[in-house]
Amino acid sequence: MSGTSLDGVDAALIQTDGTRIFRHGPALTIPYTPELRARLRHILDKAPQLAPSDPALLSAEHELTEVHAVAVQQLRQMAPDMPTDLIGFHGQTILHQLGRTWQIGNAIALSSATNLPVIHDFRTADVQAGGEGAPLAPLYHAALLHGQPRPVAILNIGGVANLTLLTSKGEILACDTGPGNALLDDWTFRHTGVPYDKDGQLARNGKVDEPILKQLVAHPFFSKPAPKSLDRLSFHTALQDIAALSPADGAATLVAFTAETIARTPLPEQPQAWFVCGGGRHNSAIMEALTQQLAGEVFPAETLGWNGDALEAECFGFLAVRSLYGLPLSLPSTTGVPAPQQGGRLSYGGITPWKARAVLNTKVQYNIG
Ligand SMILES: Nc1ncnc2c1ncn2[C@@H]1O[C@H](COP(=O)(O)OP(=O)(O)OP(=O)(O)O)[C@@H](O)[C@H]1O
Ligand SMILES: CC(=O)N[C@H]1[C@@H]2OC[C@@H](O2)[C@@H](O)[C@@H]1O[C@H](C)C(=O)O
Image (cartoon, rainbow, N blue to C red; front, top):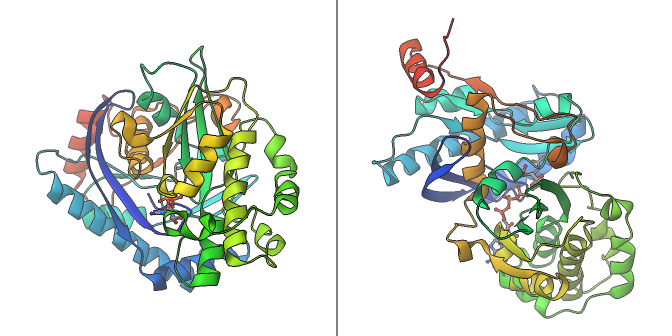
């Protein structure tokens, strides 16, 4: 998984049948080099005008696929007792708009490099069926929350923030809530040259500009009921709105923007507990703002023994298995798709047919023609 923060590749091993989670294996992160991050950022800015054959795009895609291959190799070395059957490869989202979602990453090259089947392109089927194509983590979140007192939520604060609510009746409701860390990252980088506001230090020294915050949260997206999704750049104009503020006041205002839009998300029930994953939970300014604003208790994902930096990567392993079994990846209540939707595509580059067949035959009882 390489998320919208563009900070690098998160990889995790998981043992699952796509419904139950048998074992959380090791996880790791390989940061993108500042140079690759800058190139990806540039590609993201230009994505609506880019052709899939654009040389800069292909070269970045090649490089990020190599980082994924290294991540897989390192993970396998970390857990020699956990045989790896399948890779779930999300790729890097460079564009996400109504009716169009675009992740880059070369699944055939990853399969060739690792000698494993790869499931990728998780979002297209949902979008083609009329869904938002995101968020896709909710079915994994629901599996993780199995047995927890309800209503309960998982909140992911990545570049964009998204939540999954498991209602008292056990329904799974999900949406993107608004910005996570991405605006704060861009603002911090612009003013300090470092890629993110470590532990919220910059934001803590600032004061929220209430009139600007009021104007930012008035956007109709925030009062729209779930499901709904966002692009990394969806609220990027906020950086112009706060341009005249000091670096610290701007950071404080962006932290409040993230927390307040999470708290404002219209939900049928308020969760009694929120388990927070994603890099934003390391930002104590965000966590404190959430604790103040949310009715339920706020905990880092680690409270339940999870690795909050690995959940998204684990999710795409889980979804890869669901894809292989033909189980839905999304529901009307998670992406707005009209009916539960399968998804994902399988690539196996360079794998011998007999190995591919062996893997698939043990995983699904079906004939490969
Ligand atoms: N110690 C820290 N202090 C403050 N913020 C941090 C810290 N560590 C990570 N972050 C934030 O977390 C971000 C990375 O989060 P994460 O890896 O969950 O995002 P992502 O998976 O790329 O995004 P998305 O979930 O939107 O796809 C960093 O860009 C940074 O803003
Ligand atoms: C299009 C896309 O890549 N969206 C990401 C992004 O990052 C967080 C949020 O926005 C979420 O909707 C999604 O990622 C997670 C993994 C998801 O699909 O659940």
